[in-house]
Image (tube, rainbow, N blue to C red):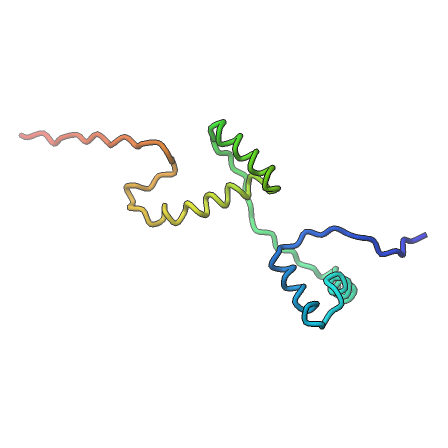
Length: 124
């Protein structure tokens, strides 16, 4: 026998998208966010869905144990992925790196670069 009872179905939505869905409810143009979603699904041809996923690659980064431990701890406390934390940190750091003079640009943070030894030109 088919299940005819509407039951809760968990969805993960971006907060901004949920706010956009809530606006017609606040303005009286829709009964609820659930009603908007149900109506949209009933009227949409899911066979024609084209889902765009950004191209992603996996990389390996050498991190000190302390940083790895901190990332795990913060990701659990904030209920997010380590990848999200890394992206946030890098997004915050990139503007400083992009505006730094070319000689000062380095991906190694916290380590001093040794100056290059230049050979003196011989006098003839």
